[in-house]
Image 1: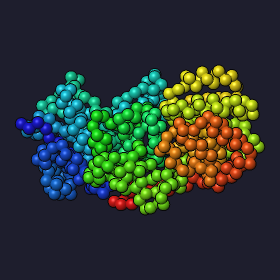
Image 2: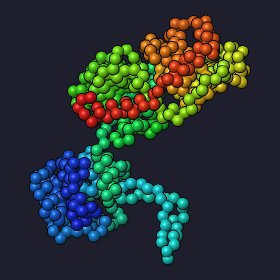
Image 3: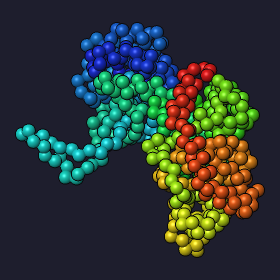
Image 4: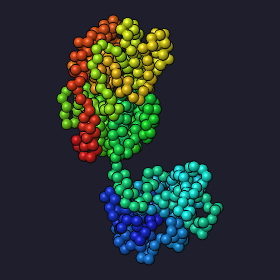
Length: 538
């Protein structure tokens, strides 16, 4: 006897949509899709389609699978095993186990069936039924009124999803008996069953989705800018499946992405390209500094297109699209887009109140990104705190989720005994922190674009040489670039801060920022990304 067969019930009379089994869903008929899925599990001679339709038998013949036709066949209950008992009983002489797979659940893949089979066999169950868990309050109808079915306000129920049933054929006579051990197989969205036109529409949209993998890095040495940008882009993509891959050292990135409930895969000991290719993506979006040539070659060889952000590494030449918003060197081309026209504002800034120019500096914002590895915040505060006290300037300090010096900074702020100094740790509403600020001191990353949008002139100190190349943070855009933090003296920082307190200079910088507009950029970048996803070439 053979170990297993797979049966596809295809009863035309039981269709909820006219001719649904032979209608094209996302380019392929339901019955053809089901047969293709089944062929990933069993050999053609072990696949049997049970049908009442001569048209469906033609599909079976052309696909090379077995079929059994009974023109009078109709199911009158939802207990499909009982409905098929005589037919299954005949298969019991040929097979030990049977997999019943419904064509009306088109999101099920052969991988889902194989995974369910492994669970079924591993647990030694007599049968397996796909189910989903729901939470509902149940009511009875009596004389036109509702009465509680259960006393509890809400009760979890497990309801059958008719995608799959697996069973030992020898136990068919005992199917209704309590001693039969039935294993539950929980399905998520792939378990949607077509029971009407709305389900058809949903399944078609889900089948047309592509798989987009964001590969990001985020740890103290490089900050969290890559993660924040990738999350912003992922938030705009609603029609496709999203998965995040975090590089081996990016534990901080994992923590932040997990809070947004996106699926995350961590790179293990294997090369990054193995982690990514295992996910079988349709498009890879890389946001982790310079991409290695070997990594990009692996993607290219697998036929996977890539979009790279802030990448001037060797691998950038193999990307379908490179977006370097923070680098203005060189003119944009069809494949490489550079400059502030491609910087994307987070949604929270679109509704934020941009600052008016006020007489004098009343509030100073100090922020150095998500990690501030060298604790620039503490050093800058120590330099400007006496000046702010003398001028009565309120100091608003914002540090990110990766800031490792929180205790020492808190102790220093307490030591200053200045009620006008306040600290905010790892805020999710940076736009609110920028509202009402007249001047800022910041690093040279993406924050300077947000400051420009909010019309906040600023002193800018780069964390390192790479960040110093972000040439947007210059006087033409309303910024006084001080230099690389480790290479400038306290005296230079103090003198430039005093210079920025002058109203004439600050007003001039404010006006330059007032002329900038980043609002349309995100739609422009998303459109470019969609072009890459939909075409072989940009």
